[in-house]
Image (cartoon, rainbow, N blue to C red; front, side):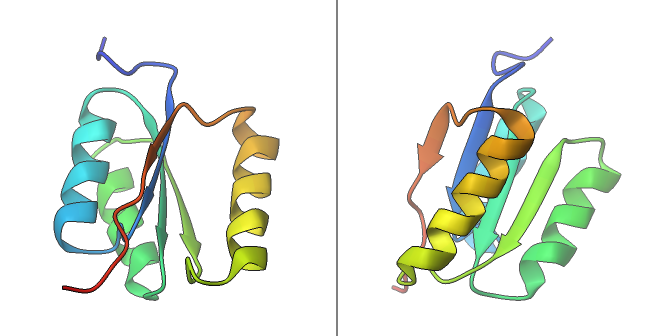
Amino acid sequence: MGRLDKKVALVTGAAVGNGWGIAKVFGLEGAHVAMLDIQEQVFESARNLEDQGYAVSAYRMDVCDRDGVEEAVDDLVKKLGKIDILVNNAGIA
């Protein structure tokens, strides 16, 4: 059992880089990870984690689009009932 079993973690900017690494660690610790990203690659990244046995949901959306964010969050809560952890990682350096 992981430290985050039965937790739901939402990670923005999760398709690549730090966000993908954060999502992987949360999955490793047992959380269901919702991966949100503006890049279409978020689906491939989520499949990669699913192939490793992690529970994942993927959403392609722009965090600057309030309606898109609300739709993703509403869908996640409808499916899993809650969000326990939020990582606001999206951004450009």
